[in-house]
Length: 428
Figure 1 (tube, one colour):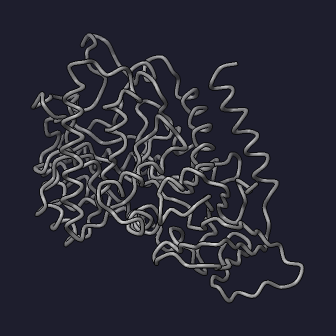
Figure 2 (cartoon, one colour):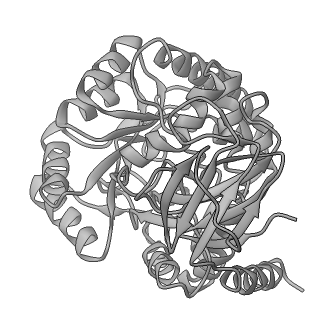
Figure 3 (cartoon, helix red, strand yellow):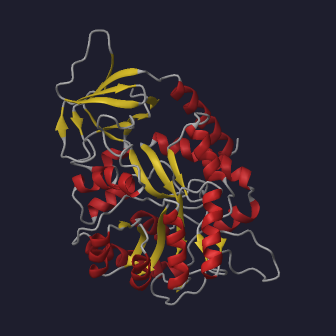
């Protein structure tokens, strides 16, 4: 039986179990509790009514005969929010996915990935493009919202906006017509039109490729790329998106590109491999978030994702990882808001390992847990709905074995998942 069919069987089983375990009125308790903002608390009870949180606190009274979900010696926390994913991508050669797999086939993968992601405790994601998968992300988003299949809430970009020739398949004959990986647009007029087209098609966020090595590598010792857009083009994209109340994420490597993106008012810097401390200070001043995505570059370096890494690129990736970690540590010296984004589309369900790296390289566990819950909720514009356990918020609640305040690896052991008041994973 193929991996795809096995994944679909697992997803279908997960779906059947999930929708059979919805309760209109429940009281959830566990030994430890994190609300998305404050330090660890003890013996808190969460009253869920319908799909929202009604009461929270150690003094919440549980009436006789109520449905009680006692999670024992576990830690209760908000559903995690991954602010940088690619739900319709999967392990293997990216070119082959784009050239040999139909968007429909990719949508099947996305559906299976969504179930694994939700089972891993991720109840909301921001998906930033899937390289030739058509409208799989918005279709999946809508199917999840309607309860057709299980998965996290999805904030979808559909595909990134780039200049012609800036981000696409490379190394093929120029006479071939290849599937596009992005929404190509040149000049302020075309850039505005591209944003309007994506928003009309259902995009919740606009992603810009500020620079990409597919266009031109500038150095061989670290991962770099040529700038894709002029300031005027970028300003048009951001202005058009913001006019529609849609946020903009900027895929960025260099400090120069980040400065331009900050200058035109993007909402987040993605990756930001080589940024200087004053740049982070400026981001903090202007309310621009940083999504470092540390894990994906380590996985790439270690040959765990994409096609096998050629020998000539291994040292380049090792240097890139070292520089990236140093950049992240510079960010920690400033008040810039840092949001969890795994970029680990290759290994769905392992997203939370990014939070381990945030702690390994300098965050406290409390900072990392905020980066995985309340901070990305603010970035996505969903702070009034998700990201914390508080009255009036959606009942997105998970429980893990162990205590992430002492060991972030506890987030690998998700025992319970509730999204919108429905139990998608019941604790044994």
